[in-house]
Image (tube, rainbow, N blue to C red):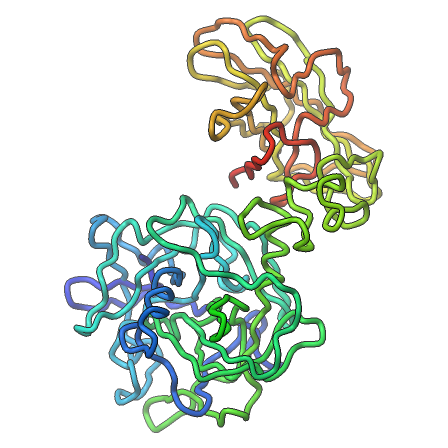
Amino acid sequence: MRANHFIIAAGFLSVGAAAGCAAPAPAGEEAAGEARSEVIYGQDDREEPFTYADPAWAARALDFTVALVPASAVDDSDPNDIQIAGPTWAGRDGVCPDERFASQPALADCSGTLIDEDLVLTAAHCINNCNNSRFVFDYAMTPSGQLGQITSDDVYSCVDFVSYYQDRRGADYTVVRLDRPVVGRTPAAVRLSSDPLAIGTPLVVHGFPRGLPLKLADGAAIRSNAPSLDFFVGNLDTFVGNSGSGVFDLNTKELVGILVRGERDFVQDGDCVRPFTCADDACRGEDVTYAFRAIQAMCERTASDLCSCGDGACGPLESPASCASDCSCGDGVCSSGESTTSCPADCQLEVLYDSHAPQPSWVTPGIQVRNTGSESVYLAGSTVRYYFSQEPPGSLEATCWGCSSELEMSFHEVPGGGCAGATHYLDVRLPFLSVDPSSTTDRFNVAFHASSWQPFNQSNDYSHAGGSWNWAPNPKITMYRLGSRVFGDEPCPGLFIPPAR
């Protein structure tokens, strides 16, 4: 696993640069973009997993709770004994030595929850660059007073933000896609209902308060709901480092929210500091973004067992025909079956196509993007995908004949062997360019061949689809922008492949 900015090695703690993962606080209390959530309400309810009153639930929390740690702090040279450098809590914050957990390592900056085999839910303010963080499971103390062993199966990287939203006074969430499915863990159960939770609902929070190893804290309840239902307020014992923590309904054991911001932090006590304390019904409370907000946004952009018709999100495998309750013209999603002609309110971009220089040993898809809307669109990082079947043996190589811009192109096999006409695909990642209203990009004369130089049979290629296109819209070529499909229809029923970023 990976924890915060620091590493434990050979019995010593080496200090690294700390970057607290905090959420917005009341106005005037923090600099812009920061927040505090370091407060104890009434009795300090934080417990180690092995001292928590419900051992079965503590085991579940340990299974799906993950620490966000700076990538630079992780030494993974020994995959069976990964080290993370950093200070104790006393060294990090100057807390008084008699405070609970003062001598424990303070290695994590933020918290998250595994919600699908490769998806983690956390706060958006915790991460804005995939390369900066590692996601570390099993960062917890053992009954012997030592950190548990961390191996390569506990440490993951971010490859994509499936959804991302931050409002310093409202919702704050992101769903991160990890570099691979998590090994041997069962994701948390998530409450998908958009109905408000009742005042007084009992809560338990799991996370890494101020970077400490995993702590569970119950003894809290919902105080109020924001009118927008972007978040609710509870009296949770949380600290910076708990940002992104999963907040659960203690009765149903469902993930209901993400801890995002709260009360002020420490109070001075001579030469050291102590956590700020409040009565259970006092102070501002801690803000928790409703989980359903993040899940709805996620389901617009990816396929997951958490997504279904009726969840309020028009997913990449849904359409107005298959799920009218979620998908309709005007909902902001260019869903399957919609186009710039049938639904200009949702669909603004289209891919024009022509086989620009047909030859037996080459596949020559000509690609051009047109903006049919009334505003300019920035296309950098967008991906156009061409599906085909590979007959000739050998590796595939692509180029762009006479192109004015350099394209990033990569070949992939469709998972599970694909379907008729689509066993492979070519992703064309667009460069830094924009397209004005009612305008098109340059024509990208893509060409690829197999290293054997044997001919292709393009008549069975999904995206070629026969005929003479003459730079007309081809709905069998797909385009993805900002994580969502914005043009075209997927070839294989029930399969959505988000482009790598």
